[in-house]
Image 1: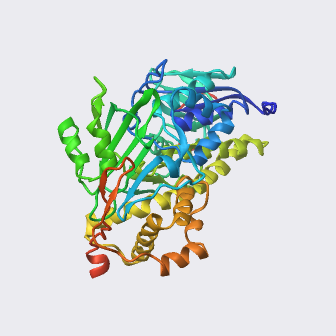
Image 2: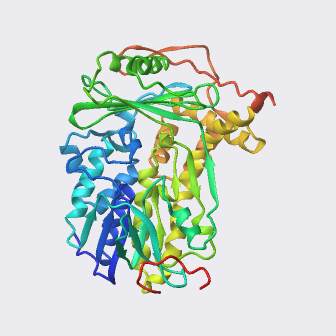
Image 3: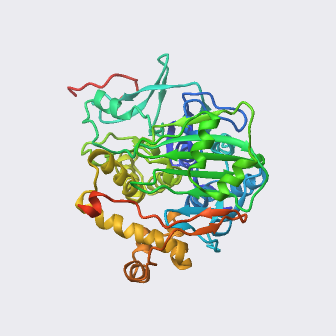
Length: 486
């Protein structure tokens, strides 16, 4: 392992939020600053367990292969550590049961490694490694109530904690997540409120953790499809031999959080693999079933603010919070933290870092955002107008034909998985070979078929075409309030 980069900047950096983005940012900043303070509003558990204020942590989380690879570079040995803790590592094409509107996707080696674990285990593993850094100090139970500014409010010089304590900072990174107060803090300092884009599919989750015998898969995906198939499920075999199953519904079709209602909702999917798994499932005592409804895509245009504060960078869900169905959020946060480190590595003046880093953060968000909202826009428009806008119809047409090919063509399936795992650009799905197949070789829709699931159970795999209705039928160090006149 190469020697760590020498410390380049004096003073301390402060990171707000101890989620995946905050932990990776702290790891990166530890190579660049004399000291780094990671502040978290809630209580950080001493073992792998739920973190206060993160209700989405109780649900299935996906880590695309690209994110896992980048985490391994930042935290060498992490994958082996997770495996030793019982987190299955497997080829996604061979050990995942995947069902789309066109049917059950045949198993085929994809060459894309996937690993299943709870978010609690991942955060705990990263947190233990972060606190081992001698220049890092972690403070939980320390809510940040505001930023501290220079006299002219052009530079952030620290953060203010509840109770009035001030932490001076040479750089502040906001990784406080989906419910970040940064827009409000900017307005209080005299900056314009950042433009925000929201796409809401009206989706909600409900998750049950249970014990069950092993199956012929380690992950299960049952994808919904706008506008007629709102329901779906994600299931993962996690550490401790347990299973975590999240059922979800879009367009306001939300799953219940009582066990009987939850099981009935899951049964409506008609997924043989899921039915067989749940038939032998015993819910973990005391775990309950947890729901979550704040799943809207939300993106702040911080990089578009012409007068951006010096010494302030926002990353992760603070900038762009994705519909969790697509599993992109953690990987995007890791990539943004790395981009921040690279920006610092090439800078001699901290005052020039924030603007450059914020632009790189925005660039990293752009493609995952388009991937995430393309489907959710369909739900959004069907909910609001009952039809797709003209500009979205060709995209939806192409995507649906592509998904039908995923079931029928192993090459397209591998390309799709590589894009899903963010190891290849979405351009791989519109290259000449795939484009020709989508336009000219999509299998004709047949009658209702009956296929077998992974364990031999009969599975309904009818090639349903959703009724598209209208789409086809139609300077200072003190913590002070900003001086707006300066």
